[in-house]
Image (cartoon, rainbow, N blue to C red; front, side):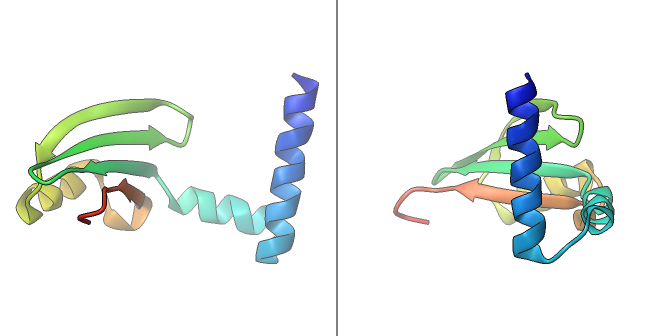
Amino acid sequence: MQNQISNNSARSDGLKKVLGTSDCDLAKSNALIGRFLGLDVHAETIAVAVAEQDGEVRSLGVIANRAESVRKLIKKLGPAEQLRACYEAGPTG
C-alpha cells in the first residue's frame, strides 16, 4: 500500500512539474471536472461508460451513433463544462 501511495505521489509531482501547477491549481481543476466519459464508437452504436471523481466506474449502456443521441446523453450527464470525454474508434473513425 505504501509503495502505491509513493508512486501516486511521484506521478502527481511529475505532473505538476510538467504543467507548472501547484496542488491548489490541480485541486481547482479537478473541482471543475465532474465526470469522465468513455465512448467506444462503432458504425451504428456507441458503448458509453462514466467514471466519477470518487473512482466509481459504470457502464451506461449503448446508444445509437447519431448526433442527437450524443446530445441527449450529454444533457443527461450534467453541464458539458464538467465533463471530460475520450473515445476509442477503429480505422474508420
